[in-house]
Structure formats: C-alpha cells, structure tokens
Image (tube, rainbow, N blue to C red; front, side):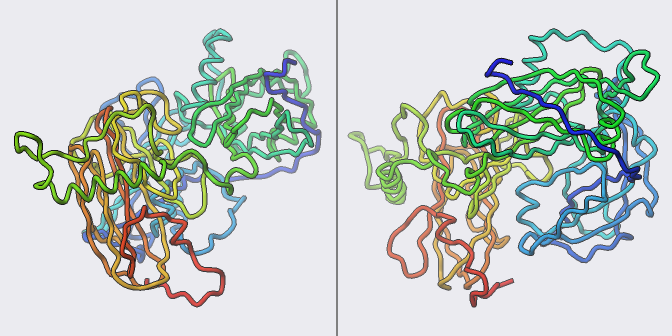
Length: 528
C-alpha cells in the first residue's frame, strides 16, 4: 500500500442483536411573528405537514404531486433554546435529519419529527411543506431531504478510476454532486506517531440500506460482498485543501461480520500521512453499485479549541481603515485640485487579501456565519432564512478592510467561483458594564446590524465601501447579534464591525473574545 493512500483495515467480528427502528424526518423549525419575534407556544395541532416526491429520473418536474400527511404523523414537537444545555442525543430515534445552521444555533426554535409519507422509501428528493394554522406566523426551515438508492442499478454505469477519483475529490474537498444518504461516524485513534493520522470511520447501521451488500456469488450461506471507495481530504483552517487520497475496498463479509454490521454499523480504519497545518479532515464513502455517498468531517484534535491563525489584518491596516472611515464623515474637507470631494475609502489594490471572512473550524466566542451561493446576483440583501446554506464559517471579529483584490474568487470551504455570495453572521455576547454602546459597520456591498433583534444599522444595496453607525443602550448580561452581508461581484471587498463601549473614548474592532460569557456561578444577569 502506498503511503499516499488511506489504508482500510478489517473490522472485528461479532454476533448481532435484532433491532427494529422506525424512520422519522427531523427538521429544525423557526416560527416568527409579524414583528420577527420567536413564537414558542405552538402545539402539534397548530401545524400541518405536506410532502412531495421528486424522482431521480425527473428532478425538474414542474409540479410534483403533494400529499398532505395526517395530523398524527407528527410524532413530536419540542422547543430548543440554544442558550440552555441540550439533552444528549436519543440513539433510539433514527431517520432523516435535516440539519440546522448558525441561524438555528442562535435562535430559539422547534425540532419537529414526523413519519414520512407513502413515498418515503422512494429514491430521490423529498420536499417538505410545513404550514401554521395560526395566522400571522412565518415558518423557516430546510425544505427537502434526499433518499439514496436502496437497490443496485440494473446496469450500473461503468465509471473509470480517473472519474471516481475526480468525484471523490469534489465531494471530499468541496461539495458532493448529490446529497449524502449514508451516515458516517468518525473517531480519531491515537497511534503514537506524528507522521501518520488514523481514524475509524463507521457506516451507521441505519444507513446500511443505502450500501449494496450482495450475496457472494453462488455461496449458499449469507456471506456478503461489499465494494466501496473511500476519499480523504485534509483542509487548513481557511478551508483550503492540503492533501487528498483515496482507496478502494472490496471485501467479503462473513456471517458474523454481516450480523455485527446490521447491529453496530460497518467500521473501517483509515490511515494516511499527516500534513502540516491540518485543521479538518473530511471523509467520503461511495457505494459502487448505487453511487450513494456518505460524507462526514472531523476537526483535528487540538485544533477546534486552539487559536485560529492568519485571519486578522495587520494592526497598521486596521488603524488606516479607521482613519479613512473617520475622514468619510468630513468629506467636504477633502477635495482635489478642482475642488471635487474625494472618497478616502478608495483604497489601493492589495497584493493579497487582508483579513478573512472566517474559518471552517468551529471556535468558542465566535460569530457563526452561514454562507449562501447567490448566483442570481441580487441587488439587495435576500432573506437568508428562506435559503439553505452551503457551509458555516467561524470568526471572532468581522475585520475585512476595504480593499481591491481581483483574484479573490473563493471564500473558505468553497470551490473556486463562489461569487456572488452572502454570509449571515450570528453570535451571542455578554456585556459586563451596562450603558450606551456605539457600533460602526463598514460594508461593500450591503449589510445590516441587528442587536437583540433590533435593527441598528442598514447599509443595504449595491455600493462601494460605506460606513454607518448607531447607538444602543445595553444592560449587563446576554445579548444577540446578527450581521447579514452580501457581495455581488469580484474586485472590492469590505466588512468591518467596530464598537465604542460605554465609557470608552476610542473605537476598536468588535471582538467576541472581549464579550465572552461569565464564569460559572458568577452573579451575571440575563436581560431576557
């Protein structure tokens, strides 16, 4: 085995225990009133769920048939408060989890569970419509889930190894071409070595219906043949791929191995060279007979809680940008030889980007930003709650100084060409000293600032770097913050958030680390 490829090792054998599971669809659901306030008193009887199925053979069908599900198919509705400790996951519940995003992580919401409709076993996209029977309530949620093929294709397409490598590379280092239907669980294994990394990657037992386990030829027993392709991509904290490797696996499962897989899942150990600057490893598994994919990522131990480097601009650049913002407020005093006002924010091109929109590595005391592909090129901020994000970024500051950089054709974790784009940043911060707080936002193109669900700054639309400021009185305790931003075209970029705290005489970049939560058991009020 070459040192550049992951090495699948053999799973242990064992005897299975019969287990019966019921599949459900789990969706995070945000309910808002006409004033954008969370509605948290809904009951099961207040909601109606409908579902439609879009076949893989006709994904662009104009009007798929919609089936209204019976009220009793909604099995549970619970409120999730992101500020409260969350209960441990219920391993007895299995089904299709439609994952939440930064928005749900910062907003009180519901988790609704329901039994899918009669087409639940059909392979393809299943679109969900949830409506409220009460008037004046708006619902936001992800609108579809995907079910992979459960039977091998009659004539599986012949895919060359080069095409498989390209497919795995796309799925592991960027985004898969089809949604994942195989659920994976990664576990880091300490090997005692610094030159290699070892993980156990297990296919969940509940996902084995999407993996082809064929009988082994004419064998009269229950030995099964499994054929998979594994891909491994290592990324740095900016989301840039560092290294990629892949390995095929063809294995005959004995009766004991097969029974164990049905009960506990199907684990394999992957070992690959340890690259420098690794932050996250993303694993992909592809079933050869169906093309079904499984994708999961794991933060490298010690990185997720460590510092995120190379994302802040130099202090001199930050100071220069603030001076330009201050000069903006007095444009009449800045004129050229012909008496025309000059824009001090027209900055020189930079040899490389200054600052960063964030890292793909989750970090404490950070903004969590949902990233959206805006290929329709909007001229104003869209309502991001109505779309599905493609990745999440984390940063303690919004500090991308105004700059011209024509080669910035990607953002962290995204393939080249992800422009135009939008990022909806959410966060929670704690104020120790109550009083008036001044905020200053600079953006190219549009952005707004909301604190405690109150819009303070609105500089929406298409425009060069433009600042605006506002003041708000903040009590001691916990507060929410939301900064949606969009960029329509390449060339010029800017997104900065500054603060002048109560009692301060100067501005500083708003840093979530300066407003971290109090120590446990501290006497610290919560204004909610």
